[in-house]
Image 1 (cartoon, rainbow, N blue to C red):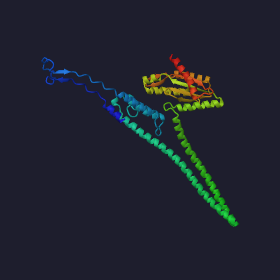
Image 2: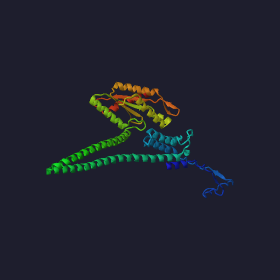
Image 3: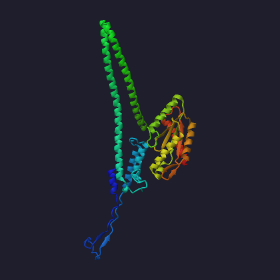
Image 4: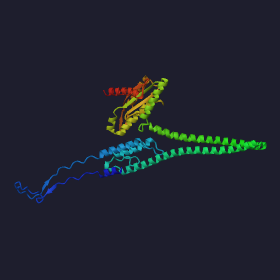
Length: 396
């Protein structure tokens, strides 16, 4: 970022080339092999040098690269304390828009500030903000790893303490029983009668203490395991989720398809698949910018959830503009009806892609019911074929 700042601050307009003036005394002499030239006047002669070559455009590729880096960061942020994923994405995307478009950064610049030229943008503030966030993200990751380490160590320490307590208790009980045995072997009935209640008391206390300790350890262990389970579950969901839309990613898609096919094989429960491809994403990106394209992609995901409302329906983003919905207990007739409803839902509701820009975002949709013996690829290819047929007919 510091090097980028230096590049932009060095950008400027090269000085105009100056005409070269030759006096009579500085003109080159005539070649002796040629006739002498006629005498010239004493006035200076001005010659115009060839135009300087145009400097290559170094700003555009640098801005494109910087924008792509910031956009990748926005899609895969590390959430800070008390920060949602949406807030983290929005923060970095604000920086990306300032770097590439010159729009003001909320909370830093005036809301009515005018977008500036590349050399006048607030590069120093952008460097400071991004550096501070990266340091905070590093501290957050270190804190999470420290919490995980402490949970594991507390569990091991608790087990070690419990084992040590059991050894001490077992030793006390063993000593009391040994005394009772010696008294019995000597035939000392009076000693046996005195020591028997004491031995029973020690044993009862040991059992009660062990049961109480076991209950406490179970409660503490359950709390630690539950806390760790939530953290691991969140990490697992993050690994199977698309950061832009919140839908499942390709890994989640494959797992959901495999489960649906397994259920069908075991129980005969029908399953169906919708294959969805957003129409005209490249045109949206070229006309209004990639942030508008991200809005369109997120809009299609929301439309899928609006139509496929059951908890068992799994919405996944499996490509840049490709989605799929895996539905159990759904036959081909129901899948065709849901595809029509989704298409109608998109046609009837415009979405705001940018300031002052509202458009209808459409998608081509295909469906396929699972068949006995299907694998994930076979099932997917049938749905994709119908989706591409629908896109061809739409184009025609």
